[in-house]
Image (tube, rainbow, N blue to C red):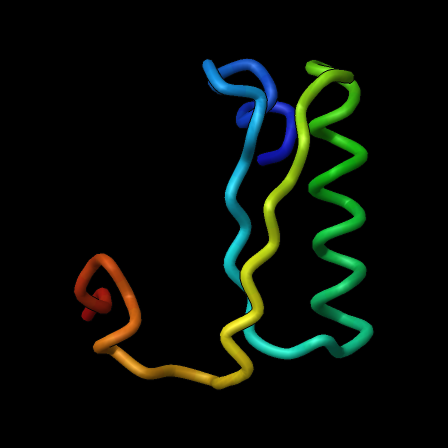
Length: 65
């Protein structure tokens, strides 16, 4: 996904919303960034920590069913 985001961005800023700073989540961010940098070395990631599992009111799109 990072590679795709790197090719699609027009502003070189990628938003990444994550739940908690646990090893699995941080690993996912790092993998995303590595892919991003392969296609767009100038891109930056803006990380937003929501510190919760799921609150539908904070999401922009409705949950899938």
